[in-house]
Length: 434
Image 1 (tube, rainbow, N blue to C red):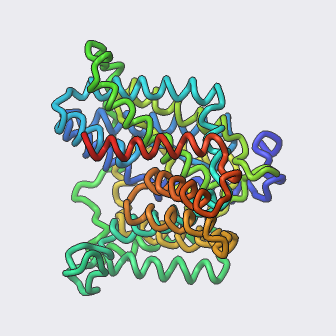
Image 2 (tube, helix red, strand yellow; image 1 turned 180 degrees about the vertical axis):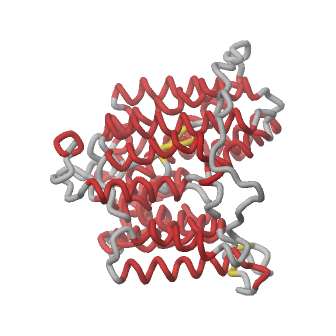
């Protein structure tokens, strides 16, 4: 185990990896309930999708562990599942089988691109300052996710966005803040596994507040429902509509994944001497394989989860943490009632606190050079406010090209970065006129 996962080389231990893997799982376990809930809006069965979600997440995360040896977990992505249901099925009037077919084809294309090194080349083309900015932007992004999930941050305050009043009508927010305080105290005191312990303590704190609820007649075990299997619709694959759906899935998944991998690599210092993500090709292949498996089982695009940063913050540095997370997803098939007890208020402090940990990269961004600092700022600013990792990368790269041209530093722009900027601008124009 030591030799395969290179534990000593990366300065970690089996204990740290297990704690990191459990922390990542707890931070993203909400997807087991949220994904089936969203896809049920497309007419799919909740229980069938729950099974597909757990199995596809487990398989993809285990592939990440053994092929890439990285502490990154995968599952059906938020945003992509919303596009699946509300845009493709409800908005465009397509069947969910049509949407699954697009996801399947997307996964096949990504497998080919990953094996050919195309996706890896795109990551390498992103300037170093933007890579660091992506890490910071993701930190702010998951912070706002935690604040919103806990009901601390809302649009119901009379302002564009704001904090709620901390009274008993906002018990979830109170529990989340108390949990954040516990997590901070444990971390400052250098208690091992402080983030994971914080999740557990916050869950308990939530009981008297009515935030953590134990159902009447609670049973810890439940038998999983069989998932869908290869429910595809091939009759419309040559249509313009299919092409539009496919490109949207491709674009969003690619840059969400790239952003997440860059953020995790920056935080965990898992980069080679050239500043590139270690085992990047294997990581991208895991993402692609997960998407194909997920489509075959009946769920939307599987992608790398930004919540993996919470596991890294807890000490995870290798694929052993991903093995732990993957196994927990399989266990969740039978123990869903137990995991369902952990409220969003308990995982929110972990996400908020990781935002602090990911801010550290901001100090190495060269803000004194406007051709580096402005694109970095736009990347950091866009991710939380647009609620999208891919949009942060898109606008940051466009700003990078504009600033380098204006600063007469065109030679600093890699060829692939030029190509990406043109593609991004074309995508913005396409979205505006369609």
